[in-house]
Every structure is written in structure tokens, then in C-alpha cells.
Length: 348
Image (cartoon, rainbow, N blue to C red; front, side, top):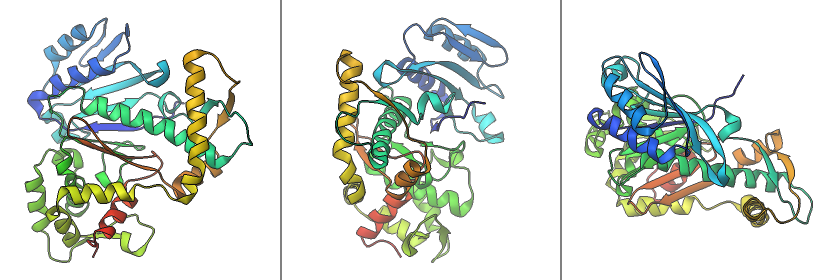
């Protein structure tokens, strides 16, 4: 049985969903790939235009568009993925997310097996874990951006990725995308409203930041939601902390997140050799010349334990004005947020 890869989610207004699907499909599909289209019937399309014509003719009501095709990853690799585009009527009944994307199998996208050029020196679980994280995060961030921002239209204001199958609180996901970096507080407000009011994230992700703030303000003073934190200050999130964060300058919030993303000592110790291995491995893949590569499996308890104990965080500002927060799919973004809020003196 294939183990599913991570799930990607994006929010978009219903009138623009098929246009967003068209842009995403064009940005992701591998040259010459066939497209499976499943709606009220099954079809096989030989071009993006043909697939979209089928989707536009049948989309709406209870009928969603379900497309399967091979996409390009880094290093000329390909992965088979599913994209689903759901109508508003369908979302009201079974909220999945207006747009969802899933690699068909973990081995296609979140693989733990790599052929690496070790060069000189003994093998190290820590270095192997950092190498795997670098490679996985590169693919994850690239796919999230191509999914949510395939062009400059800004149709998709927010999106996220998780190792699970549901769109949960953004701070509990492994990656989020926001089209406007100055609205990074949306991740925090959306998380709080979801956890406190029990609304489905896919149903409220399109709310304006002002509307989300009003929902937080409407909660009783002192209200808290439980978080999966390791330290005392990160085991819950208060209404007051969220409101103070939303009132803070967005630049201060982004700077605090960036500072909190700095790797710890254990990660920094392993990073130089890991980077050298990644660079050499890519060089060999591109030129076909260099030392031999060796198969490495990074799914052992030791590898996973190291990543979970020393989670890597990325805060990536995009040229479009957006921002991506990301960590390894086995981890969540909450430690990053908790440390940033604590550094700003906002945790209460």
C-alpha cells in the first residue's frame, strides 16, 4: 500500500477557482504528461487546455474537478500528484479546502531514501538528518509556492501544508503561505478562531484579517486554547496574546519569526558538512562526474528523533511580497511562533 505524501491546501474565491486551477496546472505539469480528469465521468486529456475545457464544462454544484498528472521536482525528478478543486456547495457539505494537492506516494515526494556523495569522513546520523531535511524542505517550499502563487494574480491569499490529511490550525501545520507578508498575523488569528470556535479552517481561511481579529475580540477576556508546546509558556495561547500580536507592527512580527528560525547548536554543528554533501551530490547529478554516491536511509528512530528535537525553520520572503513559513513535515510551526511571541514579550 502506498503511504500518502503531505497534503497541500489553498483558499480561493469560488468564481476564480478554475482560473487558479488552470494557473497551477500550467506551473506544475511535466512536459508531455497526460492528465487524468475525474468528474462525473473519467477522461484523459493530452493538454492543459483540453483538461480545463472538460473541467469548466462540468464543474459546479456537487461536482468537483479532480486532476491527476506528473509534475516536475528538482533534479529532473517527477512525481505523480492529485489536484482537486471543490465548489462552494461541495465545501459546505464536506469541507476539504477549495483547492487541495496530494502527491500520490510518500516515496515520490517525502522520501527517506537518498543516494548521497559522502566524500571524506565517517557517516553521521545528525548530518544525514540535516541533509534529508534540506532536500525535503527545498521541494516542499517550491511546491507550496507553485501551488499557491503560480502567477502574479494573487487569487490565492493563503495556503498551507501538513504531513496529515486535514487543514488544521496554521500554527500546527508544517508550512504556510501568505500572499501579503504584512498579514502574517493571519496565521495566528486563523489558528485561534479555529481552535476556540471549532470552525473548519477551510471555511474561514478566506476571511479578512480584520474579520478574524473581530472574532478573536468577541471571545471572553482571558480565553485560551490548548497548544502542543513543550514548555510551560507554549502549552496554551491566550486571546490577549493574539490581539497584541495583531496590534504589533507586521515588520516586528516577521523579524521575530526570522530570529526565532535560527538553528540551534546541534543543527549548526551538522549543517556545514550536510551542505557540502548536498552540493556535491547535485553537482554529480548535473555533470555525471565525481566520487561515487551511496544509498542512505533517513527513516530510523535516530534520524527522526534528531529532526523532531532540533526542528529546522525557514522564514522565506518572496519577491511577490508574500511569505512562506516552513519546517520539516514531521514537525509543526508552533515552536517558531511561540518563541517569536515570547521574544516580543507578548505571551501571557
